Image (cartoon, rainbow, N blue to C red):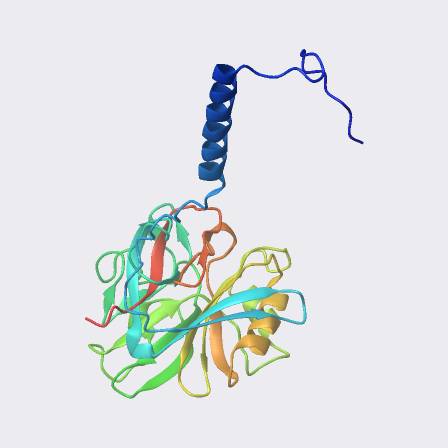
Length: 274
């Protein structure tokens, strides 16, 4: 309901010419300030803006109300690297990698027998799936083959040429064994499987393409796995769960997912093509 406001002036009173000019000037100044405030602010430049986009981006809403963000790329364009910060300030596209504690990598993260976080055989370097043998997604570059193998250390992995492969540790999804996957995930100690958490994963499809996946929705491991199977084009051949919860982060030109902005110790990055 509108109400009359008492301005303190008599009805019908007129402003003197000098005061009228001052009032108009004040009104114009206020209008100019309001216009500036309403103008959209330029979005801050991301550290990874302008890099070659050697990936395909998809966003999917799935049957269990889980929204996923996916980056598909050739296995030759996967780079396993150390991070040490939240992903957003890093000048690379990609997602978070395996599990960690403090500054120690607890999941295998190896390229050509060189761990992402240190030296071969050193604890916390990315040479081991610490404490447990766990599902590890491997690209055998010499054979042109992708697989998931269960291993406790990188030297247990079966590859053709140890100078031409990469291996990322996590927890097995067991896509081909629907009746066994949950028990195996428990045996590999997937954290908080039955709780609604942010989730990350890495899978490959029937065409040999690798997909890096982060959920925008809180979900259980089962719901995330189902969502992944629904969302990846062409069918998932096999894959692994990665670290999740606040570590679930993605740098893409199309979407930036920050989790809880915690530092993560390892990143699955997209090559810049150099």
